[in-house]
Image (cartoon, rainbow, N blue to C red):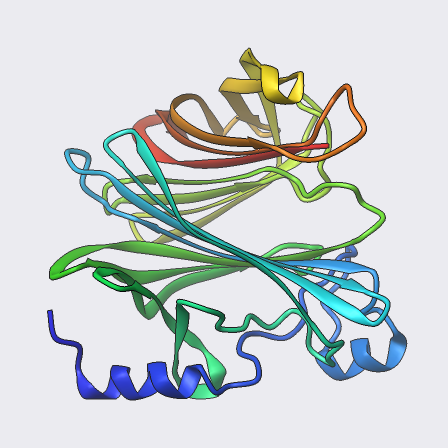
Length: 318
């Protein structure tokens, strides 16, 4: 499908941009600091910044999920950057993009950069409106338009839902996208797990464990939902591993099903894994880090009503 001239121009301009994105995500139980504050206080060193874009279709008969995962770790004298892109459909994961590189220290390390075969579509106020991967005949484009709702966590995390579409060659696939950003101190060895769930166009939900608390920790998760245009929030949700399987390359167990329940019992449910993309990290052993993306399905109950959900669950463990 031929792209409109404006977006083509934006893509070209994005490759020349120094950085794009929001102000710095926070890491403490207080509002996030501004970029100017973080650059003068020294907080931009020794931190890990995440920016993730996750596209999902809203139809149950043909589920397509496209996660783009951006990570920047600040170190003395450098910034380590990593970007990964995946396409999940029909239970098959295609890890089509993975790049790691270093950049000099900057005043805004949380901002994402185009690199290699990845280009950004940038709109007003440096807002990211799209991501384009192109490698010869292979092309995948994520376009994001108007915002549906935005949620902010107590540690400065931000989760924004947007109308979106993915272009695979000439095929346009409509859906919804999650744009999430958060940060942590580098001394925190891992990030907390999170999930993005949908039930058609009636329910979209985000679950997040902001402090990487152990499974089953009472009230460790937060949950936000957009339900029939209503904005719902649960500040304390307990998520348990209902079943695990051994992942031998890392000599660790990984979850394959979960139960969830809010403190006020208005929210509950069960999730189980449909397909997985798992990799083991490096280490001295015998236990190695695990980084997993799962497609999941299950049932979420909100105020007594059950919703059949599909989605993605991100799990990491050191």
